[in-house]
Image (spheres, rainbow, N blue to C red):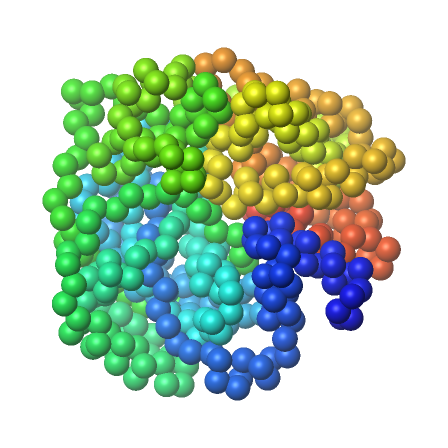
Amino acid sequence: MPQDSRARTRAIREVMAATGLSYNKAALQLDAENAPATADAAGDVQLHVLPFVFSATVPADVDRRELAQALADELHTLRRVGEEYPGRADVVVPAPVWEPEPHLAGYVHATLIVHAWAVRPWQREGEAEAVMRDFNAVAKAWLLARYPVPVEGHPVAMMLGSARAQALAAEFTAHTGGDHEDLPDGWAELIAARRAKVAATTVEPPEPMVLPEMVPNAPGGADKTSAVVSLPLPAHRPVDVDSAPPRPYRVVDRECQGWYRRSGDGRYDADRGYNRDLETTAYEDLEAARGPLRPVEPPTDEECAAVKTALVNAGRKAAASLLVALYRLVYVDSQLERTGGPRYRVMAGREGSWETDLMVRLAWDIGADLAERPKRYDEAAVAELVRVVDIWIAGPGRYTEVAANLAWLFSSVADEAGGWAAVADRYLQPGDRFGHPEHVVESVQRLLMSQSAHHEFM
């Protein structure tokens, strides 16, 4: 597209909204994503392994080896918008005890380590994060289909440091083989050479893992790939559930700062604490310094029904109505912040998640635009959505995460109504010549349809 076109400017703004990059860096990424396929064929693509930690909620009686193998078997084909590419994965099951989920009887908090193999233009800015999202989209879709759980139990992931990844990779005892010998040309030799190099590297044993949250958001596919087995890690002291009261996994303090419980020692880390000089602390100390603490809990049945009813009544104005409601909420938050009030009310439930980040960006961008077009949204639906979410973020005694729960409820309404076409007006339909730019529509769908049973826009 022309360098000075309005369409290009809008496209760059959308990349900024989706990635948090500066304007210039977003422009570079946009150009890289739109570059002709021959640019990658010139030698920029390479086979690399991307290690990351995958955390999920699974039944307590699950066979860990079978789970690892089945998960690995799903990570064969990756997809993102307009592209499909092959992948392989080694899935490692660490030895420590999987802790019981305090609010889900019969379920445990599972920790897996994934080494994801792919041939990609790794030098492209943001490519590593995008590949991780692609792999995790497949894993998330498969796990939620096999073990349905509430939103708070949805799988999350984080990248793994290179030194720790080397220590783990050196202990692999199973990898692609058997039915999976049909690797792309040259992969078998390259993977073997890399594993041999890593195995010969002396590294310190990895420290116990801490798991902040980052949730996948790209399309996924399913086929076959590699096998994996268990790996001993440093000793882990399980929580004595009989001697200590259960602590919530997530809490929000009186300043609307979110905190999550570490998987190892049970202490709490703050969302974006590294940027805010907030140190890891024990629950009792956190309560004394920043209480009262509100546990992050799912919405009530009545609240879910109210949100769904509002969206159903809005019909094809449902998507626009939700975006306008989100704009009104973030606008109120901005005014409170200016007067010294809480800063992160809408975000506090899971500030580090991709849903929260994209929700806020879409609210300020397209939500603000739609708020000036009353014919595009249903005012009664907007008012009801704002009312319910205000209970979630400001009510006493608990806090309910906003972004993923709204996506879950919207996806449910959309699935029951027959899909995106039934809950969004013509200007939010893909390919409409008079509608919003394609990348804007894709971003809105990626958020609002992320919990769709069809996984079309994840």
